[in-house]
Structure formats: structure tokens, C-alpha cells
Image (tube, rainbow, N blue to C red; front, side, top):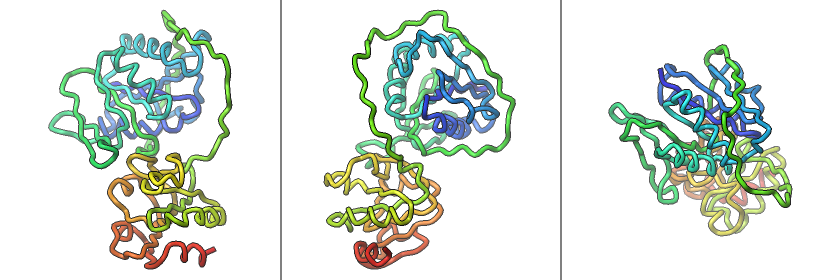
Length: 305
């Protein structure tokens, strides 16, 4: 039976649990799941993973890539995992390549889809700034390793399992020789992936992009943007929807002046309802929408408010 290790990142545990869906796409339901926790909140992982490997060694500081890589290498020698999945967060993007180098295996980064090519797992990721999707397979019989874009896979609990919890003490800990000299706390802002309502603007409302704020506030939602708006400098990439932005799954998505190119549409995952406002009723986004409003996006926003 295949063995899959999933890294539970502290403060990002739910994204780690969702990677069980990635594993299901790889193996069906015939695999053993292992969650690796370094002082993470394991509540959401219980009764979902076959085993939680808890490492609570005080010598290992939070987010110490060097030390964590060493522990995972040690665990791999013990368990012989067939695959290791890591969420492509800021920390995951540091951890995954360092681990791949240590294990001397390949790494596919920012995976958004799983397929199968002949008898091998195909990992699909955006390439050339999201203009195309590349399918990558592991041609050797080495461990399959990938970082997975947060929010792409959503795990739906089909059946509970009994979770074993193993307290693991590393035989050897090699901590990074980096000393923290100062710390600045970044203000916490809500992630667009957590919002049930998104009001998103594209090129059709570029000049009046700021009017979206009022509508989003009244709908108790958040503002989002297409890549064109981000590239223009009107807003930052943290609210971009699409292959090179974030994958979102709100209950309501209002697309204002968004044409709906493949790169943007790929960022919409299981959206319940879409309202598209566009002067071009034949825009691709309109074909996805429950309701299409043919007209000027700013006028629509003003009248709806």
C-alpha cells in the first residue's frame, strides 16, 4: 500500500488536511496517510489521517527549514514514503526545494491538478506565467514530491478513520545557525480564499477599480482582481484570482469587467454562483455565469449600491 506524508504547517493546518484530496487523486483511497506536525494544531487532522507524527523537540524552532528537512529525511528512512506533499505557502516554498535536494529527488512546484499518464502520476502546474499548463511525470521509481497550490484541492470527509498519534524524537537535530536579531509583526489581513462573497474587477473597470470597495463592504465580502488590474499597479497580487494568483471558492463571485481568459477562470474552484457584468455579453466569463448583466461595470456598481 502506498504511503503518503503530508506536512501540516503551523497556522495553515486546514490547507494541509485538504492535501488528502490530492492524495486521493493520486492513489484513489488505497493509501496510508501520515501527517507530520511540528507544534501544529492537529484538531482538524484527527480521524482523517491514519497516523499523526508529532515532533515536539524543543531544539527545533518554528519554521527552521534546515532542522525540519533533517527530521523528514530521518522519517523517510524509517517509513519509506512513496510521496511527500507540502502546501505551497511562503514557508512551503522554502521547505519543499530544500527537502527535494536532501532526498535527491525531483520536485514539482505549485501543482494545481493531478492526472495519470499510462501507469504514472501526472502533476499539472501553470507554466510561462500561467499562460499554459504543464503536465509532469516522474520517470524514475523515486519518491513523488510536490508543493500544492493552497485552495485548489478541497477535502470532503467521506469516512472517518482511527488516527494513531506517534510522538517522535529525532535521533539528531541539526538546527540552522541563524540568530533572530529583530522581529516585526505584519498586520493580519483576511485572505480572499476565506470569503464567501468576492467582488472582482478586471480591465473593464480598471479606471474606476476603487468603487468596488463600497460594494464589497455592503455585501460583507472582499475585493478581488484579475491579473490585468494587478499588472497595471492598481492593487497588489495578494487579491489576484487566477493561475498566477489565488484559487478561490466563494458562494458568490461578482465579475466586473472581467473577460474570463483561461488563466483567470482556472482560479475559480467550485464557485456556487457567478454574476458577470460586461459590455461584451459573449465574453467567456459570461458563459460561466448564472446571471449576465450586459453593460458598464461602474454603472452597475453605482446602481446596486
